[in-house]
Structures are given as C-alpha cells and as structure tokens.
Length: 270
Image 1 (spheres, rainbow, N blue to C red):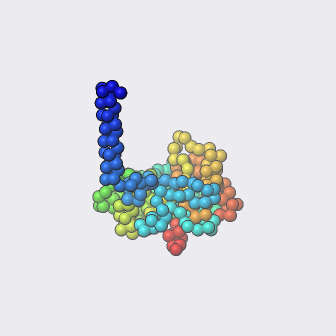
Image 2 (tube, rainbow, N blue to C red):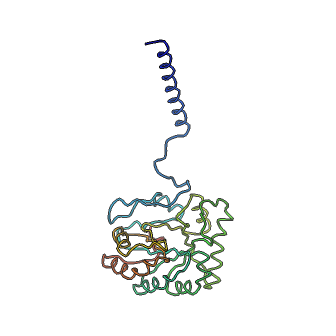
Image 3 (cartoon, helix red, strand yellow):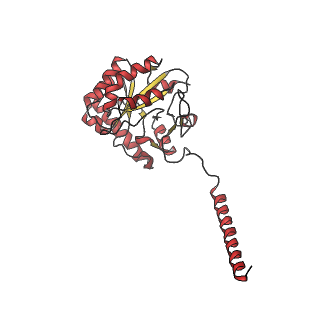
C-alpha cells in the first residue's frame, strides 16, 4: 500500500472509532430509549386494537391512569357500553341523538364547552332532564397539556362549571375530558386535585369533520367491528351520520347482547 493511501485509511478508521465512542457516550448519558410514550410526557391519547371483540391497548395503562382517577375502559367481560358525546358547538344533530337515547333508555355523558352552553341552553337542559350527565370539556377547548399554571388550568374548568350552574340551576358533575385527548401527568393530577375524574375512550372513529362525514357503512364497520365489553365510546354530536344512524346502531349493539350504562357506574367498579 502506498504511504498516502495508508495515511488516508488510518485517518478514516480513526474517525469511525471517534464517532462510535461519541455516540456511545451520548447514549449512555441519555439512558435507555423509551419504546412507548410514558405517562409523564405530554401525549395524545391513542389506541391499538389487537384482537377483535377485545378492549384495545391505550398509550397509558388502565391501572396507572386510575391513580389519577382517570379511565378509558371498564375492565370487565360483561357486555356493557358507556356512551359519551363531545360537543363543541350545535349544528342540528343533537335532538335526533337525544331521541335515539331516549327510545333505548340509554344513559350518556355529554362533554360540553362554553360555546355550546351559551348557544344551546335548551338542549343542555334537555340532557339533564332526560337523565344524562353533562361533563366538562373546558370553556374554550384549548390544548390543556400546554397549560402548566394551575390557576389557568382550573379556570378553564371552573368557568364552565359556573356557566352550567347558571344555565341549569344544578351543580356540574366533576367529569372531565381533555380536548383532543391531549394530556400530561401534571394535567391529570390537577384535575384529580379539583375532584374530577378524567375520561378518555376505548372506541371512536373519524366523525368530527362536518363537511366530510363518514357513510353509514363506514361508521358501522368501525363501531360494530371494534365494540368490546366495557367500551367507553366517543362520538361527536356534531356528526350528521351519528344523528342518522344512532337508533339503528344502538339496536345492532343490543342484538349483539350489549346494554348501556352510565360513567357513574364505571368509576364505582372495583
């Protein structure tokens, strides 16, 4: 080997060794890599469906969530469904949803924001009068995981509590759903400190785009195919599809052997 080539080869090998050592040092200082999101990080709620007819795996374990009075599924083999609806605004579909729930005597939880209560007080009153729970989806629907100041976090919930009491004359049930499913361990602790239970979900589908609604067939494929014992189902009351199919959907679930229960009963289970 010529001296010049030998010199270049030696320098190249030296660079490789130094790069390896530098990478090893950084990895050592950083610690082991996290394969999945951990509860302390800011995260979006997510699910992994692994077996038909079985509850999905969430990106935080149910037992870990319970430390913060937070839930996403009922750990049961009983065919029970917990219906929940998120409502940021009213566009004419909630009445049909309430009609279907009443027909099937199915309790539900409606997680509302300030705009909904301000613009649709009569529907809020109807929810309460027909035995449904109205939960807290915050006043302004912000990304709550980005709010680290306790007073600001609390204000989003207490402002809605005050509006609910003004609207209905009743005290709001302390059930909270994080907007967009964005959360952090600090958020969950702040909600717990306020006396709230936090609810995620174990079944949902893309039903929130007002101008791009799923077909009936697409909705049934997801909602019938992925139902499971103890499911906390998230639907949006803004969905025209949901308004049109809910009566038939509840009938189909009943034919599969399911019944409907309230979130109050979910948190009472051991």
